[in-house]
Image (cartoon, rainbow, N blue to C red):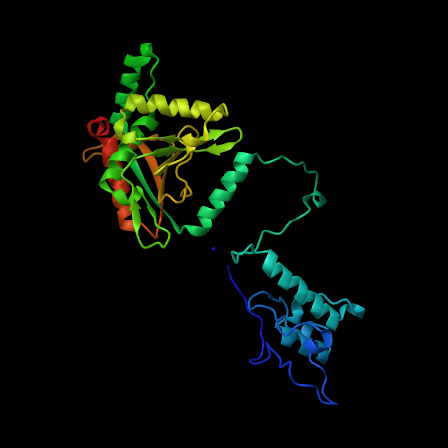
Length: 352
């Protein structure tokens, strides 16, 4: 997710000898003359020139100095007369690039996005980033860098489930109870996690063992004005759809009102991120490490499905399962989503 182009340097010229004195007719090496340490050599891959040496105005001594530092002179901006490259230009270039290679990668080896003054191109304004978004950004960035993500896409036929849900809401309406698709989805996910426990797990510190969790705490991503928060439904396996619907609605309301206690966002063993109320057909949710998988749900739609005799309208729910490939193989992910689809399709298995 980085192409590296190395400079063209002759073998043995990257680190010139510093313990030999130059002879009377020998020009001092670049390191000796400038006083820069011999270790100040450009790392392989730091410099990438766009032109060949023959188009650059630089004398033999400057070219020799560039070779000793591992610098492609085509990448150096000359400050001499008519753009001629001077020894000082080489030295300043090396200093700048070495500084960038240390401070610009933040220890990850990945260069930072360049900072640009966008006001040069037009009017701009600053919008402060909320603390929640800042915390989320750090966590998501850490997960994206550390977890080898793969996403398995599938879909589930929820025609009967939706008919049953709407029927139950008509009957339970006078009680103030509203069954949501999320409640049924949580029940189905728990069933799939029991069938495939490696998805309800975390890798240990040395990545040599899976920590299989014997509890089912399901995180649900909730959009708020301040950013994304993930309250956790504890012991989801011990609750029915009505209880799950009530509790998930309560947690979401607390999150949007900024009244969610910090403990309510801890301990998730698996996370669900649903965009069903907005739209879209599929997406790649980022694994909420140290969890090993996250389920993304997009908006359901009615499509014609051939049943062997003709086309019939069916309500299909898109599923996007992202997982940590260090802990889970593709075949396991395919079986997990297939199992989940089967449970969602059979309403009896969902509610029992």
